[in-house]
Length: 372
Image 1 (tube, rainbow, N blue to C red):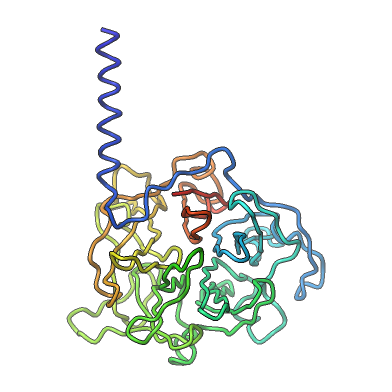
Image 2: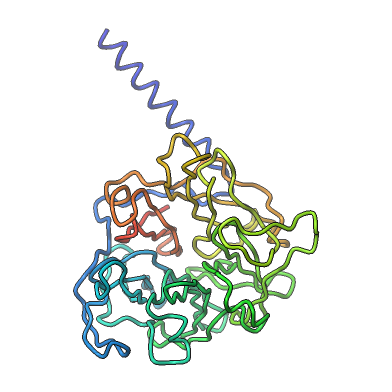
């Protein structure tokens, strides 16, 4: 009986393994293996700087660190990560910190944040919420473009900043402000710019003469740009397809894709790291939330996990394929329990030392890494 039981267990594990493998499609960036020996790789700390608005020293990453962007520069991996202080009782101010690594796993942090609310023209959009959730790409001339969320405590706005060295950043404000002034007051988040891998760099690349960016928080939309700073969201022109965002009631933009009932991505979909043009098409990793009412019953209610889509490399709106199951989900203690339970939120992706490194926020408290 013991032998039969062992064989049954082995058979169950084999079937489980095959089912897991079958969920991954040939075009996907998967599987990623979480580095349990070091995760979480970044935790809250007591780094201190003098805040220009508060005019006092603040432990700017004392509460949480999470949701990092990533880029390779001079044979090192750099993380630009969101950090919260404890100045306010219930919600700290967010700032963007910088950490570097020679192996992609062990990081050294800079003492001061590199992007944060200041007494500048953007203060009214960034205070007291802060600067949140960066994503980063590079152009072919070596300039870095960081999209991030400016949050004033009421409205989230998708902003952009540029840098030559990752330390000194120039803010440009709303990515949509030149397209239409009214967009400045629209809720907007999460800009994932389409890139192509050149060696160990992800370089923003034009498609049909334009740069493209996936963005949004409930549905996924697209915007185009000539210069990676000024973006125009693409509107829906077909009256039969117009619909308002289920979370934010603003002008209907053309939807690339949205949530699916009964799936891991049943409540919302939100961009992850920069999308990557491959031989198969545009591979785009996205974050999602499982709906409490009509989601995947095999996932806890409210779980943030990740999926992937494959889009036509000549038409980012044309979705060729989509993962049926989540390829990345919370299953570690530091992902399951925290500020927000059951969260893996992916924002950083680099190709480094012949491997893909994926960086993500865990339970909105810490930062971890997985490698393919």
